[in-house]
Image 1 (cartoon, rainbow, N blue to C red):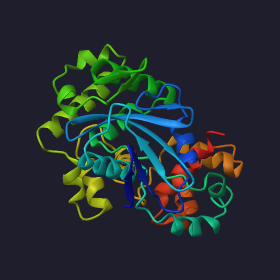
Image 2 (spheres, one colour):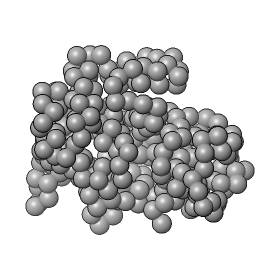
Image 3 (cartoon, one colour):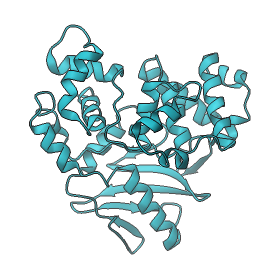
Image 4 (cartoon, rainbow, N blue to C red):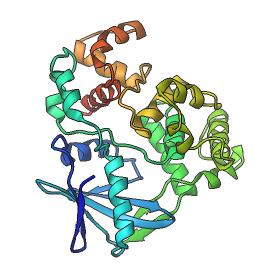
Length: 302
């Protein structure tokens, strides 16, 4: 991780294969998103690090990601934590050059990847948020999933208002664990999704599930098996969490509807591909299935 503090600004120097504008385009794909805001080319995000709430204003120049602190400058120790948070959020440890070599030789990816060069998998650093968001998105369209998230966040999350704009934090697991199913039903969650999300929150509060526990597992299969032992987490959800929260580039949500739609569009298919067909298409993506999926998702927002 390469960063420095210059005046009141945190400067983070990403790898060459990074394009802030492409990441911003992905983050701006839904007007219903309330976990961040985009204004005049800058990204605003409220975060809580070690119990301290900070509003980040994130922009870029030709060399660096530039972070300002509208709520006031934090300590140098906290600035370092912010740098680590952003480094992980934008998945800057991944050697994307290797993925690009793979993509150039792949008939599906070779035309997509150059369009979105520098796009990174935008993470969801908090495990509870990642799992809850994945559960919200199960078997419904993305628009309604965003509606559910907005209602959940605005009902149970913390917020901070400055200059007429309100910024939100995702509800903590301790808050959701204390809820009854009916309280989520009022927000139009199904009984089952309400039970799943409250159950996951309770598991995290009880120490049965945590990001640290997952990272202690030896490999993808062990993490997958462990995640799927919790009610409400199937293969798709587990892969999505490994992709967005744990930054595993080999995670592959092969049953994802968006992936199927993107493949249909790229290949001019009139029906969605079967799982076996997708496995065959993805043979060249080994180790980079998550990035192939993410770039295919991006191709849907043209």
